[in-house]
Length: 524
Image 1 (cartoon, rainbow, N blue to C red):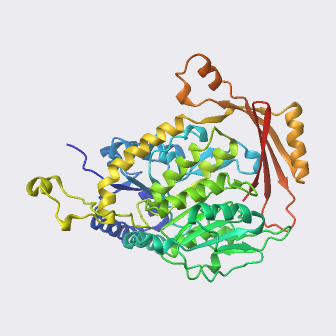
Image 2 (image 1 turned 30 degrees about the vertical axis):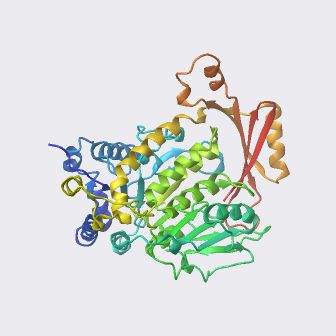
Image 3 (image 1 turned 135 degrees about the vertical axis):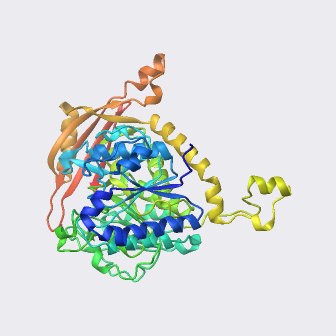
């Protein structure tokens, strides 16, 4: 018997939920899940809950159940099985990392203090389980996470997030045109470029210092933040010289609008930490979602970008928000942002790979904050109706939701094809071909660190893997593709001074022809 069509799959671990919430999982959380499924149905979307640990659920899908909820490998294999069996348009991971873990991807520059880049990227890829980021350069799935609070046994927070998803409605793009843009002063030029690219103006860029929270315009629904962040810290920070004042704080978010969408460059901006590590204060990400935000896009670890101009975190964050503003769901905007970012890379360098891995979507991926534009004459008519009437009646004219639903299968097929194509066209550093830098290039990189007052942590060299699309190349074309030189990287630590976090500088050098191109990237 054919498997019924499913538009959205919610995956979670039932035993982990029960261990965390006890009887309140069945009495409070499960009814809220059922209410979301019912609400999705009224929006023309068939949603199914799958318990990754359930032998019964997983047997029906010919997929192995999770027997160790903390195992990234088992969760990856189980979610792959669910996706292969049901091919949903949306895959929503329900729960924080103590329910369904991030995948533990190896950071190519672990000397920066992050041995791993916790990530949901592999869940968005068809590639089999691996700990290497470069194995996941072909994202094709629309995935997001609706997290509860790590270590928090009360069900109220998660019930609230499920209710937010159930009652969510799309709004006109005009409701998102005005924004809250917050930048550390040291990166004001970079942030200005991001805001101009995303919103077409820089009118409302707030620069810290001298600007400071609480923000009177916090009720605006579009938020773009480029500040410093730290692990298990409920605050973001600005910077001017050796001054690092608070720029945003979880305790100062009163007035956030429901349906807010936030794109956040800060280090650890979407780290799902246990509030017990911060005197009981949940992180900014969790606090946004508690206030009814429809999507929060941020990093699990130390993120990077240039001091001026755009790169890494700047790019992927603005790509996400731009796609939301054109009517994409938050999940589709995440997939498109990843593809846009990959497409820009001639060679995926270590900080590029880390950027791709560390930025994750928090929120139900099926939510469309912005209404899709409907053009005059657009209509959605069933085949039977069209055949019987030979025409389209005014009552059949498309609204935003029906137009999205009708075009969803084609969009997913298009994005899947793009994912395979774009990912196969990018070269990448090879983490298995890594060694210490030597000679003149090592001296050059060490000199660049010294100029910035950074203490050397590591200077290393990576081989480059050619694009897989060239594997079948011949003659000189194949020779050129397989002789792409090396990528040299220096990691240094800047003086911490008054900063309540570590400050990193990464210098990247590549030989292109007779020139050496050098980039300086700073931890956000």
